[in-house]
Length: 157
Image 1: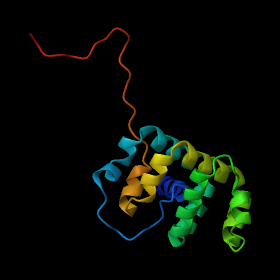
Image 2 (image 1 turned 60 degrees about the vertical axis):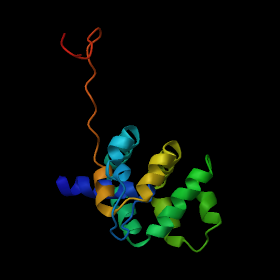
Image 3 (image 1 turned 90 degrees about the vertical axis):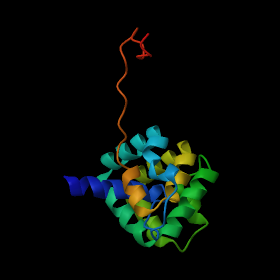
């Protein structure tokens, strides 16, 4: 189960441009990516949970094609509402991407929509180191809502 979860998370990172780049010190903001972008992190985790096969395949592709992953994510953010088909028309020699997008079209569309909905989070995740990306895809803890009428504890008088 743990291996499956990790594989799914790695796949989700593909669309976010979070392949395997050389290890480098990551800024504190990226180290805490899931806490900086809790909604984006939760949605990315949910996507990977809902699309485990696509998540595995995309992450494997991203592991050897990180720069191309970044290009796809950057294009998706710059071209809202445009489908992956338009990207592929301008990149005719990317047959591997066309094959993946064809086989996992609904998952690819959803992942591109995530990039467009959370562009700041997607860009930050693309810049992160590998270990940071794995942590970033871990679902953030959601704070428990306080009951109505309850107030935060204040200083004792």
